[in-house]
Length: 114
Image (cartoon, one colour):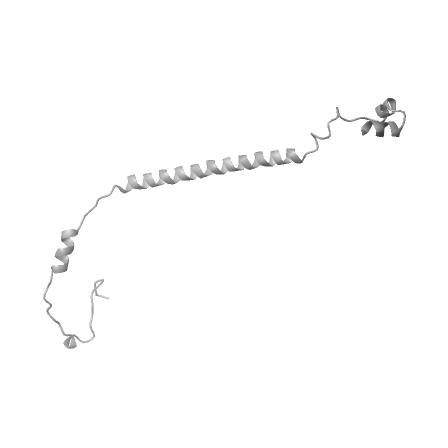
């Protein structure tokens, strides 16, 4: 209960062996020579990152809309090509009554057809 955080305690202090170690700052000195302390503007970096991400998402949304519009237009063209509306034009159609007025018999119509 009375120990400070990080303090090491031993069961029997008489058995503990202490050694003096020669201090060597050689490695620390080499590290300190190449040490670079940077103080980046984290708020500006975060804002730039958020702006880039927003721009990227906006571009993706535009691309998706453009793709969907192209797909809709292609589907409309395909639907129009497969539609019988262009083929079944009422101006080109002839009724049986009209054929009966124009031809006396079916053989006449067949002869005129060829």
